[in-house]
Every structure is written in structure tokens, then in C-alpha cells.
Length: 183
Image 1: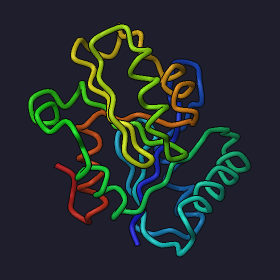
Image 2: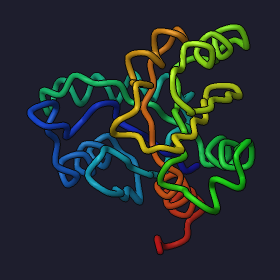
Image 3: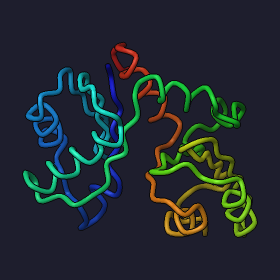
Image 4: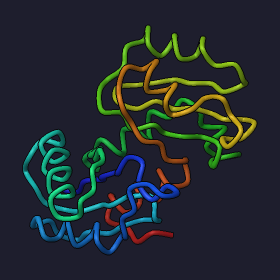
């Protein structure tokens, strides 16, 4: 079984530095196969493991802390769950026309409709948020860098932790998880 694992808040300026070769070695050292990293933002796809995604998250977090001295969240989804994230995207036009300004926020826990509504209400710009299960989709029509919609606000309003990837990265991870070479 293929899995997609995302690390939260790594390789930011002066914070949680990890080389992708080290991440790959960690995953392979735990007995997983076909490990492939993508970009420098903490994305890895690997095969193997019959554990639940929650137990994989815990095992990866413990191993990263012990082996690499890295304290961060791992968010793991099966290839089938990742495909469901792609299929559930409520913003197909934005995905096609401006994928770098569409984010999928992979969340630790499922979020309630009330929390999603509270987040949308708190937004002061033109950003739009929708959520399904353990994924929130956010469109940043005016760009992400200057937006007031921050990770801290998202996590506070949704009541759970997560990590975001732009739609280009989401699709590249889907390609890797499906067993195809990245484009």
C-alpha cells in the first residue's frame, strides 16, 4: 500500500531543518519501500505498512525525534485517501487556472461545518475556504504571502493542526502515489 506523508513546518528559515535524503533514509530505515521525496518542504511517498495512518504518523514522529532530533507533525494519507482529496476539490476552475494559489490543508482531525463557517467569517480578504473530512481547500486569489489568513488562524478556527500544499504539489504527490514518475 502506498502512503503520502507530509511534514508540518519544516525547512522554514531557521526552523526544523531536514534534508530530504535524511527523511528518505528515516523512512527506509523503518522498513518502508520505494520512498520518494518531493521538493524540500517535507513530502514523501512510500510503500508498505499495514498500520493505520494514525499509527504511522506516531511511528514517524517518534523516529524523527529520536533519529533526527526533529519535533514535528507527520500527516499521513493512503494513496486512496490522497486520490479522494484530489477528487473532492471544490475549486476546479482555480485548480486549472491558478493552482499555485489553491491550497489543500491536510488536517490532523476532521473539522465541523461550524468551524469551517467560523473560519470563513473571520477572513478579512477575498480568500475562500471549503472543507471535507480531514482536508480544507483554500483559494488565495490575491496571493498567499500578504494574506491575513495565516496558518495560526486556520488551525485556531478549525480546532486542529495541519499543513498546506499548493495544488501543483498535491497533483505531483498524487502522481507519485499512483506509481507514475513525476512530471
